[in-house]
Image 1 (cartoon, rainbow, N blue to C red):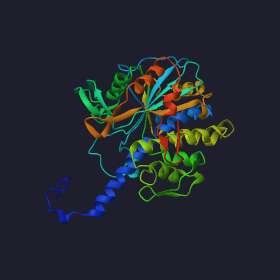
Image 2: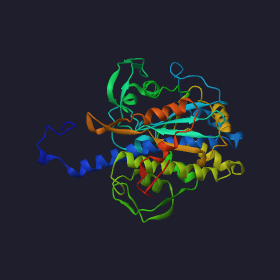
Image 3: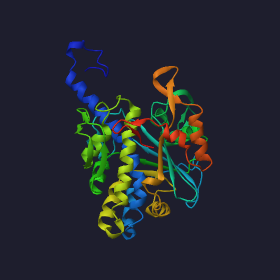
Image 4: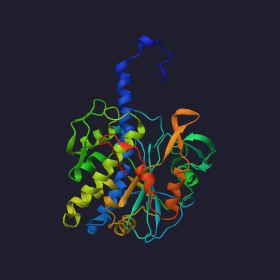
Amino acid sequence: MATRDGRRFPLPRRNPDRRHRKDERTRKQRVVRRLVWVVTAVLVVCLGTAGFAYWRLDHNVSGIDLSKVLTDADDSGAMNILVMGSDSRSGDNGDLAGGDTGGTSRSDTTAVVHINEDHTKAETVWIPRDTLVDIPTCTDSDGNTVPAQQDAMFNSAYSEGGPECTVKTVEQMSGLELNHYVELDFSGFVQFVDDIGGVTITTTEDIDDPDSGFDEPAGTHHLDGDEALAFVRTRHGVGDGSDLDRIQLEQQMATAVIDQVKSLNLVTHPKQAYDIASDLTKSLTTDTGLDSISSLLGLGKSLTGIGADDVTQVTLPTQTAPSDPNRVVPKSPDAGQVWDALKNDKSIPSSIVHDQRANPANGSSSG
């Protein structure tokens, strides 16, 4: 049987179609993992309604004890929430993702969501997966010590050390104290978008990406779950094909999802609210401070005043790494100014928001 890199057989024996299918599955897994963080932003809206049914959902939420690395916070004050998406193959994810991760889970989606003290605004910072960072010594989920690393890819913190290692890495690179952890797998995302009735996006560029399957002219489009997934999978059909460009599409989708959920008036549609919450909680893992419906409901009620216009989204400012043209490093002083704003419960500087990479689908910043 051939080894994974195919070196045991001569090149003519390799099947290019099989390799193409594997590459396509990898692209799909990576982009769906990125998108799932969006669900957390709207989960709090769903949990603020139809409370009579949510006691049934407690068993859906999984909890991880991160008390050694997270800082307690009062839900009435400012807080920092680390939101991640993983490619775990448990449950329905195996059918959705396809392929094999070699027994590990990885994350290419990481966002730090800062809720201000008045709970009227949220500042969201996306951390590119290819950012080179120093990873501190940490303990994985099995209790094993993971040694410190220098100049390692950011997403390797999760693949090698799990949630605790990622929390410590983010705290070290940002200087922030994180208060909560939320992780979502991607099994329920397509169903979730269908549950909320689809989302509306507008582009000023034609998009035709045979890899993602998204093929639409410039204009306004209402997308169902499959089409929304295709949109955020788009990479080669618009822009320069970079991972940083695709983050802009994901941020546009995040705004569209929040707008759609806020428009539903779920208070008057308890059955729909319950269906949405059920799909979300089945794919949700949190720290033990949020691993019950009552805890999530309390957080959700405190955040119901935050709408899409109150959320600022930026990608952490980066520049090409001197050691590797395919990697990036935090850009000084801009990255430091972003983290300082969150530490001081301030808005991210407008100069950094305005300097964000343009959304390749509409030629504008999505911040």
